[in-house]
Length: 384
Image (cartoon, rainbow, N blue to C red):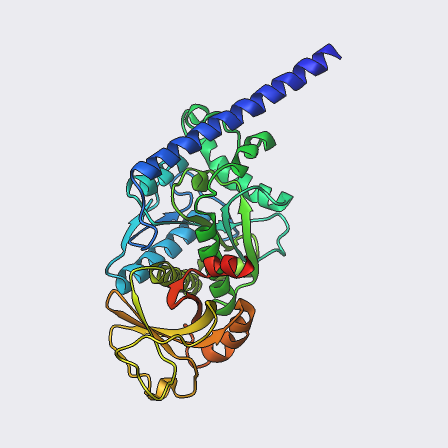
């Protein structure tokens, strides 16, 4: 009995020490973020992290390796962003077949004060019938499968020199090590969930992939970052048909394009939340130029943004005539046009599919007192 009590005390001490180290590490990140803050009202720097590389192949399929697939997707995604957003700096943790330790990947994002960190991977499972795409954010493991995915990705540190010291004794195969993950990365959780959801929507609707959802798990590479961060599992290399898709140029184009569309929507959502002057139109047959009128008695409501443009459009132009409650928002030399006035997100979403038949890139925005705000913030205000 004495030895059992001693063993339990040792276990308790180990767990307590692990949690304490993690709290101190998280506190140090918080101090760094407070003293040298990352702008949260714009997305000007994005770090794209192609998983694995060099002597670490990642998951291995019948005809390809994870490290090669994800590098292809990452480079395509970066080019899409660079070609479409001159105001965004794209940084790669690797742009060729080299091994980069997990801590260096996060340090690259932190040292460059990135506004977003996107880590791209491909999954594998002994059950070869499993396929589809999923996106992870940092958080407590919700089920055994999430835990196994996190363990597989975190085991990369075993290839690094002196990993035990560098990662404060973290053991990727020990359940107790993952207790720490319920304590960190809460600051940017909502933003991380927002872009993760958008990516899954694009995978399902535009890339025609099976949507395995947004999940939370304890990934070291996300834990050490100090900005909104996600880890994408673009598909299962262990599934023969999906491996062919992941390994093809067409498949990688589709996936990179889907992630880019989600990034574009996320960037617009973040940057719409401040620094602009709205002009609200009540009658879509007449443009109000000198005054601002409220189109609804609702304080917080949802609309569907059709498109944004560098050029100003008249609200009596044909694209708007079939819609009511058309609003124009002006921000940083961009004109944004949104339609409808929906009291709930579900009602806006029910109209989104119909609107997307004419405007494929349309998406839902939230408005509070004539000002565009993040959708998650609107949901909180409405639920109060």
